[in-house]
Amino acid sequence: MKRILVVIALSSVMFACNNKEKEEAALKQQQAEKQLAIKAVKDSLRLDSFKKAEVAKVEQEKEAKRQAELAAARRAGANSSRSYASSGGSSSGAYGGTQPTAKKKGWSDAAKGAVIGGAAGAVGGALIDKKKGRGAIIGGLVGAGGGYLIGRGEDRKSGRVQPKN
Image (cartoon, rainbow, N blue to C red; front, top):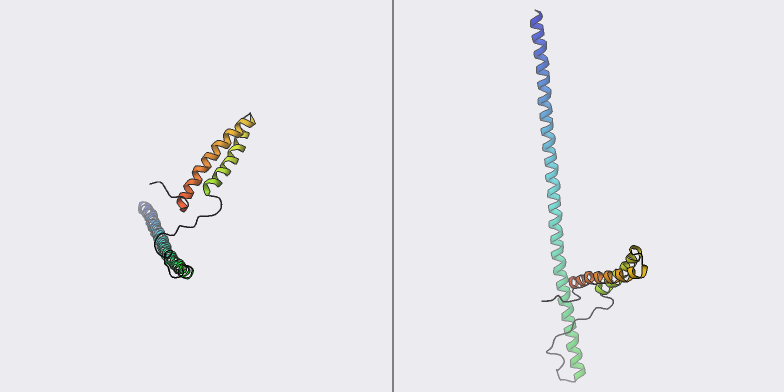
């Protein structure tokens, strides 16, 4: 009788352990599925926001292009009406030639970069070198050169300077 009770007790312990493991495995699987579902939702939201940003960018470019065309048409209309009124019937100024683009006023990014880089290089050179004057001069020259190159690149990106062909 004791053997039967021992066998029953051991088998019940084994079954109890197996059930918990199965439950824990099922619970872990459910958690993993939930995490995958959450990740999929987050990814779809990111993709949706990128699509919205692309659509907004395209619409903004179209609007800017339309505004530029309207401004060009207004300028062309204003120039032709002025030339007719001022020339007394001759149309020498209204046709032919291209309109020069307006030059930007103020400092270019290359000039700003050279000044800022020169100042920073001079301060850095004076701090690093034991002979303050020599370090400031060398640092200023190197900083101004580097700042100019970086600013020139920004000018090319903005359209202020035409890139080399």
